[in-house]
Image (cartoon, rainbow, N blue to C red; front, side):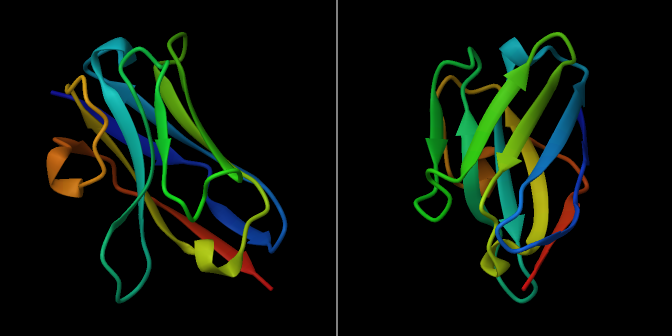
Length: 124
């Protein structure tokens, strides 16, 4: 059983940066494709970024491309999302998802394991 725990969320001013983390247990990250999704109040959970089992392939939503970077750290068995040039529209609860697939996917239902989420709030 895979367990995911997110951390690092908080309040940041527009234009600022934040890095959120997802610590995994139960499997090594080389066995998992990892992804970040976010959900704002009243909206559906949306794809943000994903990284392959090997860590060599990444995928980003158009809205964050060039501003966010997803990575994996095998030593800590954790995944990260570095968020730069944050905008108020980035305010949401950010969830980490994991799946054993060799294909990167953008739909929440394709991910088997989820964390509890970490709140990111961007102020003007």
